[in-house]
Length: 455
Image (tube, rainbow, N blue to C red; front, side, top):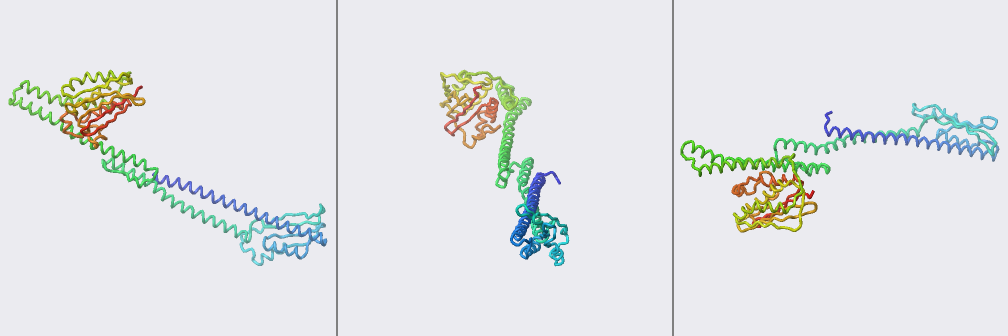
């Protein structure tokens, strides 16, 4: 048999079921037979005691050991319970004998089963009154079960065997159904995994058809498939965007260089500057890709040290001050008398804030303002950057940290972005074991909050 999950479940379930069936069946059978033999023994002792009492009573009344009534009682026990007696007086003289009935019963075919044992055991009981022995009784009884006792026990055994066989059959059938039902969920998961390996991104596991134990696994798989599907969409989108970003400056450079080669254009400083600008677009694109790869490197090394948030805010103000003045956007740094200290890589923190503040500047119209505030939460210290820009649509918020995602592609091209900046920010924040959240409303503004652990 193949070592499949279903075959193993079927095998173990059958082993447990059969062991339980056989143990319970044989324990019932043996226990019942022992109790039945005890019952017969007690019944025999009770009958013997009855005859013994009758003999004593008769001796007290008449001086004889037996009478017709006692003989009738012994004959009745011989017929019904296969108990035979020989009664002797104190001199050893035989006074009564019902063993001769054994032969008569055999001739009458009272004992029809030829397999019954003909061996009889006997017990000797001394009959005494006031410690004076007045006689003795030799009680004969069959060594095994015969007659109705044997038939009764045989019927019980047959019923137990039949019940055990039926239970085994039912156990086998239910084991097959149970193993099939349990393995069905794993088979569905296996098939969907294979379909996902074949790049069928819309493949999903039917959760409602799984057992309660497998539903979390199925839901996790569906979440993974959904994530891979989104990643595939983003990958294709990025490939298209990257091709476009590369095609435009390359086409421009090619046409300009060919114009120089053909003598159509003179290499004037202005035209050379245009060619240089297109080349720098390519350089910036490659640099951003390199930054993303470096930020997402799981082995990225952080040179952490204790940092005061106010000093970082001052550096950002000095760095972006001229750019904000040029665009006529007000940069407002909310300073605090309290010192906010945390442990982080200062260069990476500045890189994170530079990306966020630069986005706020680019998407804020002239006359608006950008506010930077130092915040704290539990064991975290961070920065809140709030702008009054164009905002972000709600449908785009869940994907802002996805690599290469851009909600408004035309707007991003105008600002020079390719959708990598926030991916770099998220990777660097995760490297610090920090948190980042974005709240935004269209035509109202966006608030980006970045937290770093204090230690």
